[in-house]
Every structure is written in C-alpha cells, then in structure tokens.
Length: 472
Length: 97
Ligand SMILES: Cc1cc2nc3c(=O)[nH]c(=O)nc-3n(C[C@H](O)[C@H](O)[C@H](O)COP(=O)(O)OP(=O)(O)OC[C@H]3O[C@@H](n4cnc5c(N)ncnc54)[C@H](O)[C@@H]3O)c2cc1C
Ligand code: FES
Ligand code: FES
Image (cartoon, rainbow over all chains, first blue to last red; front, side):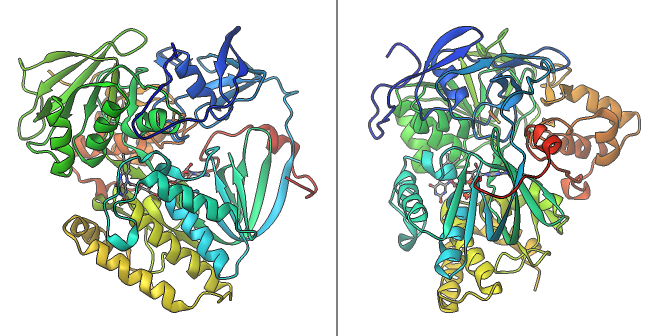
C-alpha cells in the first residue's frame, strides 16, 4: 500500500473490508469501513485537521480516543465534530475547520432527545466497564453500557504485548486477547444493551445524557458506574500543539487498532512502561524510533522493556527534555536539551533531533469530569494521577448511587481496573437487591486485588488509596 | 533559555499560551477559579481535559504551592462536544433509539 497503512506486522492483521468514498475538502480519499474519519485522513497523508481559533495555528490529532477535541472538523455540515471517534460512512463529506468554523447546516438530520430507564448505567467500555457490566448482569441487573468509541475495549484493544500482573489475572496473555474475550461475553449477554459511539456528556437532575452524531438519549439510571478511563498528560514546550505531537497511547491506537503508521521517525518523550512499550511496538510496525528522552536520571519502566529497545540500537537519553517542536504545519524535528536535578534545561546543551513525530508519555490523568459534575467528594492524589473520587472499598462514592472504577478512579493497570469493575458492578447490583452472584465472589476479588497491589509496583498505589478509600 | 513562551500552548481549545497564564497570575489572579475566568482557559470543547492540569501546574510553580493546595474547578455539562440541536429539539417519545 502506498499510503500510511501498515501492510505486514509480526502480531497483527487488519481486516479492513471494502473501501468507502469520503470527500475531504472537495477531493476523494480512500477510507475503510472500520476506520474513523481522523484515521482515514491520516492514512491518506492528511495531518492537519483545523486551524485554531485565535492564532490560526495548525492542529491535528493528539489523543486519538475522543478526549482532547484537537481533531475537530466539519462533517456533513456539522462543525466541531471529534473525527477520531466518528466512524466513516460512504459518501461522508469532511472539511477542514478554520478558526471558530462556519455556521452549521441545520437541516442535518438532528433527532430530538429520547428518554430511557436503566437499572445500572455503565459509562465507558474499557476493561473496567466491561467487567462491571458483566458482573452486574450476572448478579441479575439490567445494564446499559455506553462508550464513545465505535469499538468496545478501551485501551486494552491496542495492547499487543504480554501482560504483567498475577497468574490468575491474565499475566502472560496479550491485552488484545483479553479484550476480545470480554467483548464477546458482553455482546452475548442479553441483559446488557450496548450503545457504541455514544458520549456521556452531562448530568441533568440525576439523569445522564449521552449522544452520538445524530441521536441523544437521556438515561434515567438507578445506579451509575463511571469507568471513563484516563487521558494522556500534555507537556509544556514550544509548539506542543503542532500536528505530529501525539500522546504515546494515540500512536499505539493508530498502529495497533487501525494499522496506520503514526510517522516514520518517532521521538518518544518519557521512559516509563508506556513509553518503552510503545517504542518497542513502533519498531515492530517497522517505524524508526530516533530516541527516548527521559527527564529523570534513570529509566522509570521495567528494565526488560528498556533493554529490549536498547538492544535494537535506540538511544535512551536520560536527564533530557524536549524544548521545542520544529516545523511549519507539521513536526520536522525536535530540540532536546540536558536538564539539571531540578529538571531545568542546561544552556548550551540543546541539540536538534530529526523526526516527524513526537510521542508524549508523561503519564495519565483520570477522566473524572462526570464525577466532578455529580459534585462528589474528590481528593488530589498524585500517586493515582490527579483528582479522584473518594469511595469505600466497593467503589461506591460519596453519592451512594454513583460508583467509579478503573483508571477513572485512579490510574493503575488493566488487571486492577477489571477487578475494580467487577467489585463495583456486583455492588451496584446488590444495592438494587439482585443477588444471583454470592457475595463471596466479590470478597474473593477484593482479596485478589489486595494481593496484586502487595507487589513492589503496588506500593505507590496503596499510599494513594489511603487518601481516597475513606468512605463507609 | 526556557522551554516555554507564547508559542507554548496550555489550552489548545481556546488558544491560550503558558505566558498568558503566567502574566495573569502575576496580575493577581492567583487561584484556579479566578484564573480560569479571567484568562478563559478550560472553557473550550474539551472542557479542560487537556489544560486544567497544566494551568494548575503553572499556578503551583509560580505560587510555590503544591498541586493538592489547588482545588479542582467545577465542571458543567456538556463535558464533551455534542450537537446543540438536541437541546433545541427537546424531548421525543421513547420508541427505539
Ligand atoms: C501502552 C500501554 C501499556 C499498558 N500495559 C499494561 C499492562 O501490561 N498490564 C496492565 O495491567 N495494564 C496496562 N496498561 C494500562 C491499562 O491499559 C489501563 O489501566 C486500562 O485500560 C484502564 O481501563 P479502564 O477501563 O479504566 O479505562 P479505558 O481502557 O481507558 O476505557 C475507558 C473507556 O471509556 C470510554 N469513555 C470515556 N469517556 C466517556 C464518555 N464521556 N462517554 C462514553 N464513553 C466514554 C472510552 O472511550 C474508553 O473506551 C497499559 C496502558 C498503556 C497505554
Ligand atoms: S479528541 Fe480526537 S484526537 Fe483527541
Ligand atoms: S484545552 Fe483547554 S478547554 Fe480544551
């Protein structure tokens, strides 16, 4: 293929289907049915999607999972559409959005708001939300599961590496395999209704409103489980908003979910597990990693991952940071420099690194917007990634009808997200009087979760949990 | 040499630079809520998912405070961009989605 789509990969294959026609600024591009608009454009070599509202700066994708709104374009006459989570359709008309955008064409098929009752509403279909839905359903509750992405699975669907975690909880299995199994189980459960492509965007007097491109539904749930995951953290350096600057997870979404190359020469910023794993996966996809920049004097992630990429000749630059993205409408190079103990750049140490993509892996921030809006008690907990909801051991927050689970309740890992989801799902069902699953099942999961956190990497999490696991 | 200036964007939705936030702090907008209202970051389509943490970091650094001393601003709906037409149309009967 002469576009940015990956033809061969050691682990993955992509069943792309037959191409559909999409118009981009008046010209035809090739898109495949499972792709989102932003992905199809990127595969066709389009990297700039809009110009910003005040300074008219070029903007492209950053998060690739619907969190940052950097990829907004005008689609079929509707401006401000997040194109990274909108699936392509034959005949779609996509336009670059300039500044604040043109007035929408109101004849676009807008429906009114429907109302739906729900026993348990689960927001987010990553590992936490999938497990929460499954176990709430197993206990006897009717469940509605929402996810703003066209595909269920959250971050798990892009994890091609074998998992860390305890034997019982999937260690040694690839994330994509775990995701596939969970999704199949959820889809096969009659008491779970899935709304894919639906974004929950607010609370209105106890109801949660969610919408896709042309439907809105006001859900009246009795219990809500918020499993909205986390968003990648931005870093501050010159031109940090230039197309070609991605979250590391976004690069992973492009190549592992959609089979599209994020770039040809990538600079990774951050040498934690995510930065190292994504660097290795980039290399697997045949992409050159020109270096890994890390501010700390040592690599933060597991050494196995670090040595894997070092063995392949990638430079890991500890005590370095990125100062600037260089380019006009797309990254052409990066300026990096050495830093002192206070992470301040040392004058005279600047060097230019040629690259077309800069990936940031500076950690994740729990997506707590819905929890904040519900006016729950939150606490700032650095160990868990930022502000998170206070709760009891069963993940019930300061509002007894609202639960939080997974990265949204504190950034940790998929194995723990799944257990938290299970505990929350069961508790929501129990609180409604459904008891088809004995409480021993929930208790055992709780013990397993404690066991998993007893390891060396759990120590930090446990400190964080002391601040938030406080409610009775 | 610094890594930040008016070309370092803190709020990409509303195009607000790190420099503008720093200037406002030095003008006396020294808590997250009034800083947000004055500089107008965090009010774009993503509702602060990208920028609130950066603004809090800048504020903490400029004021010599820690992040937990800086409270999270309140969020209002919509937390993600959705077509306003839904609200104009209002509720409909509940048949199928
Ligand atoms: C590169 C990388 C490697 C990793 N490796 C491992 C590993 O080896 N082992 C391990 O245990 N963990 C690993 N993790 C971590 C793991 O992927 C996450 O901790 C886990 O996916 C969190 O699950 P979650 O369900 O909480 O969130 P997510 O998986 O992020 O799912 C959240 C879901 O919610 C949806 N959503 C968000 N907001 C809304 C809304 N408003 N409306 C509707 N839907 C919404 C999103 O679309 C998404 O699908 C890794 C992560 C990365 C990035
Ligand atoms: S919302 Fe689409 S790139 Fe972040
Ligand atoms: S980045 Fe500030 S509101 Fe979106």
